[in-house]
Length: 256
Image 1 (cartoon, rainbow, N blue to C red):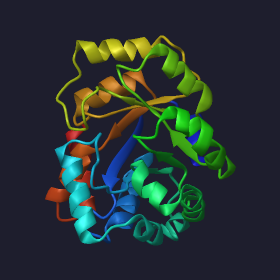
Image 2: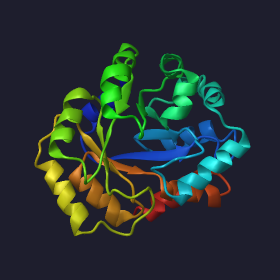
Image 3: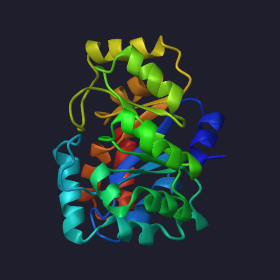
Image 4: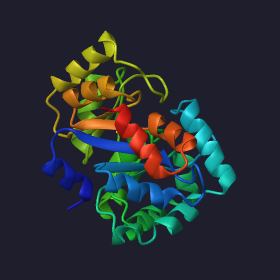
């Protein structure tokens, strides 16, 4: 069974997923960060593929992607680094990146490499849903890769149900229509959005991301979905810390 599906069968609530950008803060830090996160009890990891025009990301992740590219990170380099990661890493690993680098690599070749190194799913924020259904889903299914789709407060109920019917793994609930970035709290509009989605009784579990950086936002996310995804906060801590272990310690302290 795909590791993403296994995780949600074993743990239906309180899941914590962490995002960071491959090649940041240093070119060779990717696997050390993954192993450190697993050792500290993180349930799932999203590894960002750096891209020069990350339209859904705020300044923190944009800066991290720029630094990673300057460090020399490429998709081919990332796959090379991940070779052998499954010798000691057992939690689900997801690649998150934009369509351009993946198409340049070749989508089927990308899927083959994902399977080879042990990637369980892919998040492609700028992949149109119709293209996913027609062109990408059949290939991903062949390789048992989960393509995770995003929804926002502006996504219609009809589109959400369509996504729920044609995806597997989990649905990524973007907390707002804005770009990524830490927030102190979720306002009434976001809480209403969470309640609306809860009332839909969707088939897939959901994870809430964008803006989670402290105990208050973490609790709100985990009360309204199976878990939370933290990105910008951790990326900032990686930039400021001497080691991945120090960054993880600071993150977990901020979430107490």
